[in-house]
Image (cartoon, rainbow, N blue to C red; front, side, top):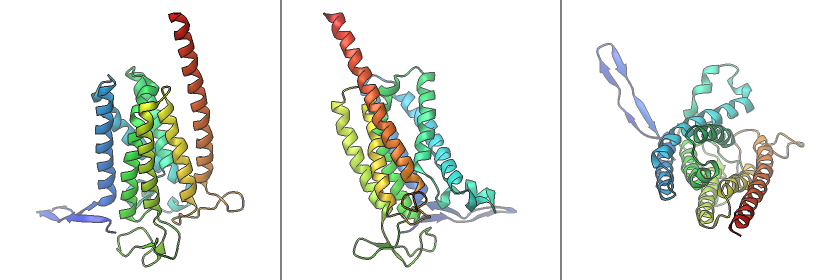
Length: 275
């Protein structure tokens, strides 16, 4: 795995020096994931009668909110890492983005954007949800290339070994490919959500199925992670991300129940009016 795709050579113009500038696969994969996902979401929005330009604009807000939220979550959970040099908080190219923080940030900003532009909240959320999973898949491939979010030591054919000196993972140690576990799981989530969209029973169903699915995936993958001390609660049995996964799973179930009930009530009222 090679974290740096290539470097733009150093340019010297008198006393002014620029570079060398490394082009990192981590950022490139996030960029590709964002562009592909927002393009597909805008196409689906157009089919549903929603202005695709609004979705494109919202995507920029969501990306920024996700980066800030995911980094902030990581910093809050790992404050001890930044006590000596707080400028490291901004070094996101070294890894340290927590998806749950990004999801919370993106949801908050997304709800604000949709209300501001008077777009249907849960209908739009359903359109976007499958492509969040798809974009996250690309992001995990970026983690794989960078070596962050690496797994714990293992043995067998399933393991991978990082050797590039720019990698964030331990070198020369066989590790579980947790980044690929999650990328594969997110692709499955995308397929499930994409299929469910055609058969959804109420607005918001697709969106809230996503965090339910992801929380299960993340809870399982956490047992194989080795990038930080994962066991924190209940005698070291589960990690902070697993606690969040449990909470997110039950929040998702509640919202599915709540929105499903509201959808049935609206259908009943509509049927009575017709009668």
